[in-house]
Length: 599
Image 1 (cartoon, rainbow, N blue to C red):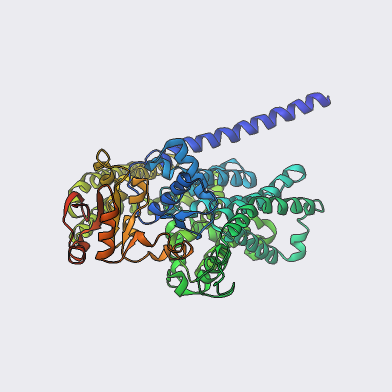
Image 2 (cartoon, helix red, strand yellow):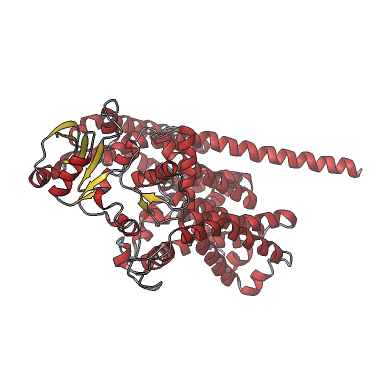
């Protein structure tokens, strides 16, 4: 009898596991095509994608995985975990747009899976699927899944930590302990991705959550055995997050002339000051340090826009959540309260910061996706589709508006000269996009009129997926041109003795060293983001920054091979006046020129 019951339980658990695996594989199959399948189409967008590609490439070339470098100079802005992921992709797939974006897009897929697991663990299978779809279809989440930044990685690990905590409160036994360990491990990985916010955001959210429930009510959710798991978790956190921070501090100590730990002066400072004081403290409180000032309401506007199209469900979702009042939310729906606190804290935290970049808001979307996903799952399971009538109508209106919007954008950019000679090349993809939106919206509209809600939303999701597929082909027209084509044109004639120079504006040519596979000389001052690394490296790199004609002539004399200069159209006159160099134009593309200096 006992054996039969045990076997029956095992078969049920096996079926449940198979169901989880099937859903995860289906999500990965669908969104791998969208997130990974077209990442090779769009050129690297400088400066960010160029910068975060160059750093891991320099790691691979130098073999130094402790001190990140940019242009062969120390770059202490962020921890190296994401760079390490990229190093692995470069070693597996070589240097190409797919490999350079692979780690970032893979992290986006992991975030979708984590959100599915959280939704399903707390609210059931339908909620898990809806939560994953809400996240994956979000325009901002998708866009940042295609652009190389550190924010996707830290956001996914923060979500993993936050989800682990709230699910752990619903579990018991070994699974509870494992989830507590996951909280600390994920927090440590988040710290290793982008610094202290990796542990600050989860812990602050939990603290506010505990206060909102009432300290005694919160403590009643804990068990005596949790203490030992927490101690083990802290040890695990330190084991993951401490070694690199210690090694980087030892490898990059302050010089004797350092002004002190609490000084704003960077002179003589080492890794510890720059990483902790400059990046984590001064950048947060001091506008002059951050140089990323935006109005206080910046994220209040950006956060909802980034959640489109699921934004259209949010008002009804919040209305239903608040219907029974604050007391009910605390006692009967505390998990949703936790997700709302998570969202509000992240928005508030970065709103008061002096440093504001659009990408900072990314950690809120897994939480919002579960909140809306649970509401959608309830409607779907109860077949209460009348409640989707308003969102349906909004989607149809927006779909038809989207038919003409690309043409308006194309016309404005073309009139302003932003597209230059490539304006005609953009006509075909814009026409395809408009036709796609018209067709998808019309089919969805047909099903809506006939009351077939499921088919309406299937078509709506399919249309959004097709729109995402178009992202890479269209986004390339809206960003700066790439230096990749220039490197390809001289690939057959360049030699190891050639020297390459960026004229005046390092940031806009940030992908040039990536495709060259070597560092470059620069005409002009040291770029702001490299000033600390330049100071740390002393006079070693002084000759690589050309200040005047004398420096340029010195470079010509000492270079055995050819000298190539990449330069923007607007800077050619200044280059001619200042350096009086004889050159030929090797390649030209829109605003960029590649010059070959005649010796």
